[in-house]
Image (tube, rainbow, N blue to C red):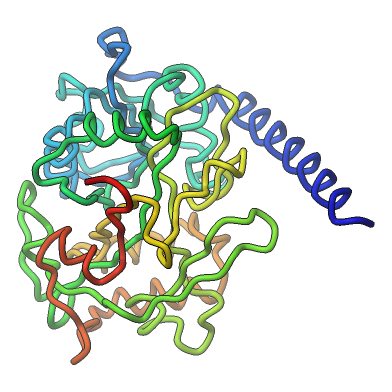
Length: 341
């Protein structure tokens, strides 16, 4: 088969795969029930956040503050069976709409199907940011330029998507010895990260840049680095009902939307998602996940990962780097200013 025919066949298969994902989204729509609907207040230029949460009452105060400060106008959140006050807390927020479900997180493609339905209904034409409650987006100049300025620049450049690398933050010392109060900036507690042990390759099927490495590979997956968590994400997209995430926000269809990284040429602007998973509550949450078995197909490898987190490991090493802010991540090559001046 010629290269052109292979390209056409691949495009055909990806197009049908996207349609199957969209059908899944439509089919799973009845699994979520609206609890607090404030979507009537969404304006045409609103930037929206979509998230699935469970028992995140500790993280949510700062999570909401962080994205409000960046210019997010409305949050559309699916609560997957929280029992720690998360639902009541979200219901009291004037810029949050909430849906609830007790269905399987794993069988919803880890919340992608549920959020896909909300994006289908409310995201069209909006810049939509899809993140977890333990992910804080930063990007070049974010201290002085909000998301409206970033997305306006992306619009002017003809870009419909924006990429970010997941950067795991952690404390120095055993995880449970760290101190954190709801509402605090988690980067003050989790103030270290791995700076240079990352690698990338082009995904053979989807064609996106596939990034692995960092502290989780170093500590938990050193014997099987190919199984380490994927760190590339495309979390910010000017949405269309025709779009579909494949696996979390690691991959998206159509594939042109994940053409967001160009670290060698530094021509594309990209950001980072500061991953605040390793707060002192991580042991408790990992113990819960071992029982619920809703993550990563419950493989033995990830069961061992969660088991080790319940033991409060120390992730710090002599090569750890202290987090100093977004400009530092640009200097280290973990995100890029590209042509955004």
